Image (cartoon, rainbow, N blue to C red):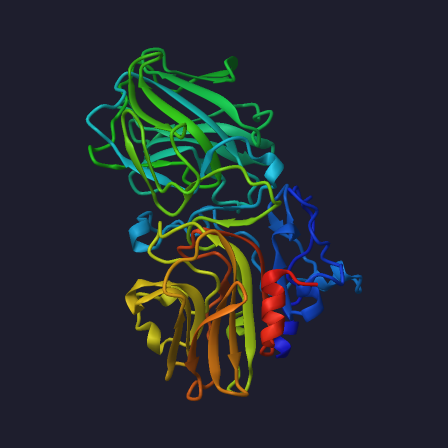
Length: 479
């Protein structure tokens, strides 16, 4: 499987691990992953924190080998609006966020990924007071999608009723807001950006934005201190309210949020709010005094204490763009494994890696060459692995989502024509693979993408069937 070896240039390390106990170094001979020699390996610790980019480095370099080759087919963290078409998570079209944040950066209970509520009949009309306690997690962005929305009520991604956001510019990260009022003329929306970048956007801070329709001004306070005031092109305007029942998105992309209030006028009555003080780790719904919020494809999370993680909360994250990554020859065995924690069925599917996911739901997946680790409600798979050559289709199913972190391993062994699924070193299901031919997909693979709600420490792949002892050793961390 030369194609797997061509992808050994996956990632390597640039984030310090903060852990309860000292982790096993990746170059240690006692690391079962290293000893088993995977042909492709991705570790959470191999992400550059400042830009959240996958660096061009082979995991083999961590084992003292030669300088790494260039990464092949790896598109970093494209999420963050890289696919902006569609904003309805029920349709699995929403492009959301990815970020990697070490444990030391977490402060208190926060939400990751978008939560949704609905606009009520109450909305600020003359001026508004928006308050949020939040931080921006380090993320990769492309030039066309530099806005990271704190809150969003939008028409069509062009006209925004209200969109306060972190705005990533060459000068730094600024505070910005788009909104609509009745004096726009031929403009679609009003936009205001701070002239100065925020001093500490990756820290947790209280932001207060007041838009005064009478004076035509926008003012931002940070942690109670005046930061900047701007004069808008129009004054004496009335704020345009979104339609009742319209979607209201909270922390749509890579923002950690503790609380939010939207008030009708400065220091006025609260019309929308979001507060995690009563939430617990794993909550997919949050109720406050004014709103009920539901997870689009994220969750409420508590601080981590065991080092960096790969995080995904929506479509299009952590892609390996080389379609050959998915190709399995008719006589080739392989093993796929990952150590991760599934967050729950917030979205309709939980994905690990796949070749056909872009077309899933648009065509019959049983006739689409590719493979994937996921929950597939359409196929009656609660949590498992599916693979198709286009002619033959196989599934192995754990029967339920495992609780907490676990090691999932899938082995296709051509020597005895079996496909087997293992959870934490124990075989839970198997299938006859004697009729499974070659699997070749033109679609990119994805780690924690396409509806995924999970976080992971590592993903690995071998171009052979691991032995039972190797699978148990990797799952149990045996030396």
